[in-house]
Length: 135
Ligand code: 5GP
Ligand code: ZN
Image 1 (spheres, rainbow, N blue to C red):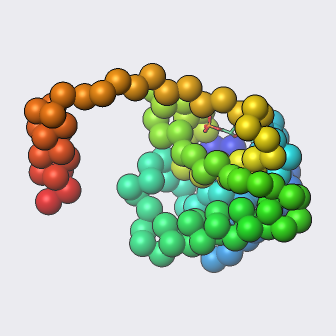
Image 2 (image 1 turned 45 degrees about the vertical axis):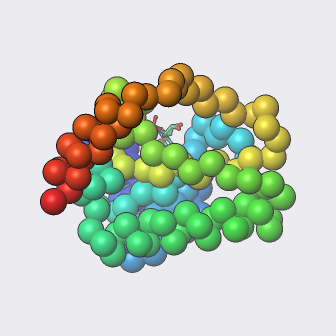
């Protein structure tokens, strides 16, 4: 059983923040900032695309509500929402989780992205391939 399934089942201790029909949210044990939460579907899935519409809606609603609470209760000035999907993207726990990271100052968290301007043709070809995958 994965550690987040253990948390959902009540077999691994947690600091619960939200529990609904399909979604649970609890504090990350290694918080990037105060109030760093993980929002997870109660059903074990690895990828965002595996969620049902109902699960996806509750996940996003819970994340939005938690962000509001971070603002009103903890004084957060902003929030980062992020998902690491797949080992190559840094996913360590193979149970989908949305990080909700309240931000109090710019320097606390550094997300580095190396990006360069792409050629027009490459953008066109890539968009066409993705549209194909979505048909
Ligand atoms: P990932 O790198 O997979 O996106 O993030 C996994 C997150 O889960 C990490 O931020 C880590 O601190 C957190 N985490 C790992 N094990 C536990 C645990 O047993 N309890 C809680 N609350 N968080 C955990
Ligand atoms: Zn799981």
